[in-house]
Image (cartoon, rainbow, N blue to C red; front, side):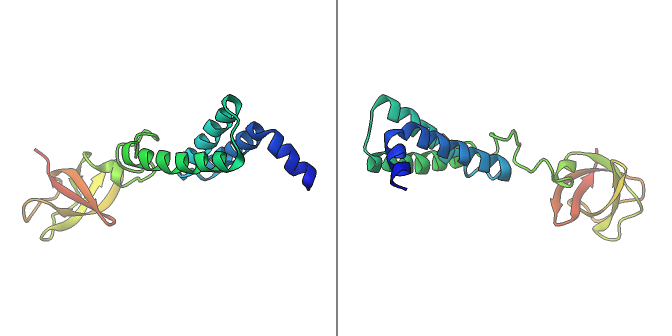
Length: 154
């Protein structure tokens, strides 16, 4: 065990590079977005140990501070942009319907009814007005639970 510790102390670059690689692999496996910044911070500390040898305590402190700062900055400024998202989950098949046009399947009873969009029938509620005739064109304005919010298309 002492030999392994001596090897780690003698080669801090590889310890930090290995930690960064392990964190990056875990990030790729989970896709959470939370482990990307600690992985990058470990990479920065690895390079820093090549430039300026630091004691382990200072290396660990630099890693911790970098991880906290990069995580907060990334969550504040890069939310959604890193994955190319426009504010919603690309796998959400209901939210992708916002802006699409369709038609009322039958006359709405009050504000509730059913619409046909992209080959599927959906439960819907009117955003504007109190009635909608069967076959009337509609546009999806939002999602409320599993129901689409619609308005008459102009």
